[in-house]
Length: 485
Image 1 (cartoon, rainbow, N blue to C red):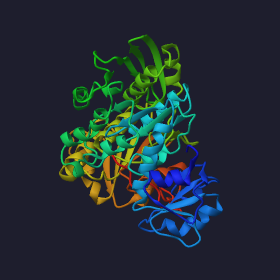
Image 2: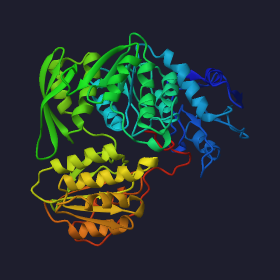
Image 3: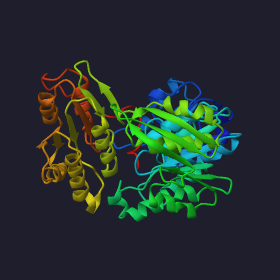
Image 4: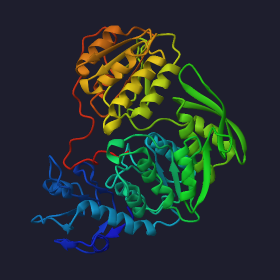
């Protein structure tokens, strides 16, 4: 964070300073987990469902925090008292962004792929200057200001992932740090149970390009009609990306190798360059095109772009993490989250991996689909069968429609099985796998990751040792709330 006095922080958040020197300066990061506090930092205390961050203010001060920002006074602790800690973080971020000279803010949204694309963008823009991007999926009203406050006077690019669970959410995030470039990847059915319709999801995602000024740039997926239509909703320049002929940044001659990695010829207004991706999945073509358009607009020369795209790696965990074990079994851990669109691209990636062995998928429940829940699950099962997946293990009764969709496909030569939980799924898949096989693990934050973790350990045929390791931290202050879509 920019060095800021407690008096300035207090004014920005409309708070009240108690027991602290107004001239004391915050020189470190703003953190809501006391374990992450470093000397010169500011600790933000939240009242969570299981822990009260105020109980850890003394711990944060011992670690070097200049003060704690919270909602109740603590005897003996330097405090900035506010009405709402989350709103205060947003207010502080909003106040400090204008003090960052030459900062270029890039916003990324979409129903799927935004975390990966955010990571790809950060790698490309890092070649041009100091870049700040959030870890994982810090994409909501807490995670976004937390990321903004990581930026300093030397930061040139700030890449922000923007999620939404309703109309107005992205508009609010853009009010904290107005983007110069806005990337919209797709409009799917993630969280459709909350939005009510795909049209409303598109309306929400388009709030990103509506926030752009006339000197801004909207990077839009030309292959998604709902995204492409957003060109009429922005005052900024429009850059289309995709495989459509009219895309300014276009992939042609797309090929996928036996490891599921795509290569293509990148056609741009400045010329063409070959690209060979190291990240698995054909769907990464679209993600890398969006990242390439932003990087090129920001000044990365075409001569460097092809090699830079080939050097990209996946950063955030449990997203198309492909590893091959010592016994020759390949595992695709895509267990972070799931919706029908991301399930489809993951299953196609599984089908593209040509090891000569059999293919299996361990699939879990997809949440927040509302009235589309049964259809979404059945479609996933049908696609698995149509792609010729050899073995399908569906975890839990709430995901049973995946199983029913698969077995209803006439002529499918594979086998589908419905199991009660992750432990049973792990035992069944371990007993079936043999060297050369490939298995995909994916679900909607329903502990399906336990199966992937178990498969990282003992080799095929071993007893079930699936653990119960938590997916997130359980520290002294709440982690970011459930990420938005």
